[in-house]
Length: 216
Length: 179
Image 1 (cartoon, each protein chain N blue to C red):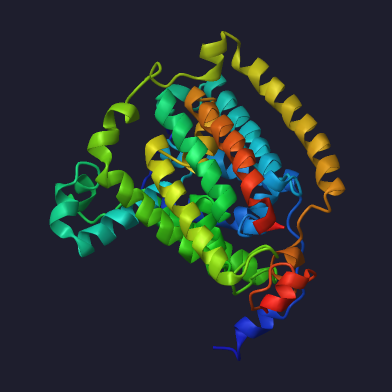
Image 2 (tube, rainbow over the protein chains, first blue to last red):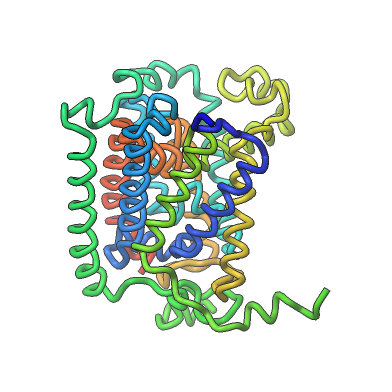
């Protein structure tokens, strides 16, 4: 059997999504207050979960490549287009602080009852349409500063991949330690009852605050 | 069906979120399995591109089909792709997880500094920035940041650095809203 299986059928998509959505919800990533806690420094879960997942999956991919089970040359590696990817990343970061979600977490928020996720998804549809409408004008910028195809950090830095993986694991450990100190100092991390109160419905983000009481 | 299963689930005690280390390890294993099964990682924004193409095809079919970016999606069923099934799976997984843990919350989630209509307006605005940004970057936090990051792709780390820097910078203006 050669890997990857290149199974892009319905069942493969459903199963991968089920696992993905279940873990994201478990991590608290259906809650925009939990998610934006990353940038208010009240909750470092976004950094912790993403960085851990990258280190675990990258180690798995490296092991699969080194043992010949699944060569890295056979999986999809995105290619850098410096300006459009930096600008797009910045817009998604800004959209995250303004809107409280990113694309995947908006699906998780919607499915766990957040009506504001519907407004975010409607906005994304408009944003894609604006991009498509302006595509002819944007295209030179979109294709500018193309990097080497499928370039990876070990190639860029001239270091063996395991050195980078160990460095990432050390950075993750440092981030966990520092992040936990900072979030505790800021009254975090955010719990399920912090997100929308302990009742099962209603619109009351921070029930402890006078402004919220007046609004309810 | 049994009597009011939703109610019973939703009045069950709320369970805490998973510890971030556990969630990260399971997410990393799920991501690795996605690579083994499909040859690529997990994603999300591709589905919303298809949703935009499908809606544009309904609202303004001639303009949408002539559009250089969305037109190709409308030559067949715009939703026909692995990513659509994956996002359906994400929603089912999140619904099941939130109901089983008592974490399902129906309503508008917002900070104390905002009333619901303002929160919905900002969610819409943030969505516009995100939808535009995800097409510019050719992916989002999942497809480019997480999945690209797992391959150690340089593109993924340029994306992630820009994402975190802009997120912190924008939060200087948004801090009161999320209080």
